[in-house]
Length: 620
Image (cartoon, rainbow, N blue to C red):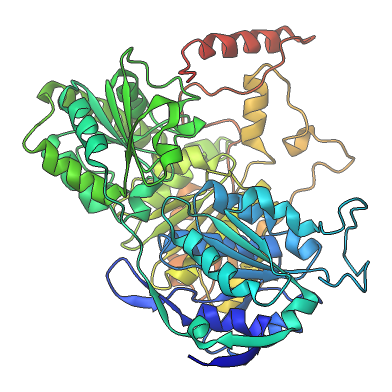
């Protein structure tokens, strides 16, 4: 084949455009559907120019903040279940480091994300350049080295030919179900501008299909033996169920063998909430029914879960003395956690082969009936606390998070996609949003990133333009990163954003006082300053960025506002005050560091409680 004379920047753009992928329904689409970009001197003249040349083939969307646009890309890639990869590009210096947080989100959630950041000059002749941080003893180090801990693949292109092998390796890493995560390429300014003879095959069309690893026969046999011996087995559905498009396989497996299912935050909406075998969300942000079953289960089939502390109750949740955890996971690292019996395989392929191998084996009916009883208690509790009542508001009490989520849950429409992240909402939406459709939920709780919500909603809406994206966000996260309200307006990506104002970081205030402390620096009322009574008008903040917006005070007003929001032609923000002390209960033990010595007896008592809880931990 021949060659083409291109700059490094042009070669990158041409290679991205040439990649196609197979979607979940078998259709073909661009692997890289677009780029989020904020240009500066480190990327505007070269990569920006290359993107402009081919803007009709690889659209570029302008963000307002580099962190926000990279978070939007992460949410987009999650919404399409890792089948496409939105990219983010920044200049050097602070533009690049703003994206480190988003890389952490993608890394912890096992999501693909391609980051292309400008870098200082490979020649070093002009050093020190604008925005360069000099390391006296390691001159090759730049701020882009900060991406190393939060990238699955990291490289700095210092010679044009390096791109020919590095960029394909980055793509393969992002598409590998076992190693999936963010890829980072540092692009020195002078190298971006260099022209070289690019082989035609580098910019030729290439089609990708996600590999489905089949389970090893020996591991499969061991998992089958464990399940056949189980009296009280439990399926734990993690995010890998969604990424593998394994929801139908999960349903078939659970129904055939009559095994109850619990869901992690990432795995929520793997099974519709109304299904008789769905026992609800598990863990610290979970419900009593799921946690009660987990405590009694003798075999736990963990499908596509990395088993984080909020899922396992800091490894205190599985209390059966002889419990066996089967780790069905594409990643060996996750499949082997805490002496789990590994079943290293694609979630869908693994479930299908387990189903065939188990044949007509069915769980004892008493266990399934126990699960049904527990499940009924969970739904009765949520129905009670989410009930529409404006009496408390009339008495001077604001509505609760549970009532807000309940109002949206009762009025959900086909296609609704709910998105949330850090703060108080993970526990509330995980319990109160009862999914009628699979893959209708994104709560970023791997990195628990405040600021993900609005940016993530923008990205999710781009990925699913025909669905209603509903964002739940608190006042704390809104203040951290709200500028993508404007991004959604100018880009025409309408979403509904519900801002619940409880006067500060109320859920952390809850943790602070529950662990023996006193309110300090979390609620605005407890912060230092002469004007802490000043509050943000979130309706006006949204209107200033071009959104339609209103403020409501009751559940009835919220339900009415949702109708107007659905009819809106642009992003619609609904703001309301919510209770700072009322929360959905039902979680389990969570280990946090509490001082062993304190001048407050309540803190020492809390430390003793943490130590007591640790006695039930699975330590290895």
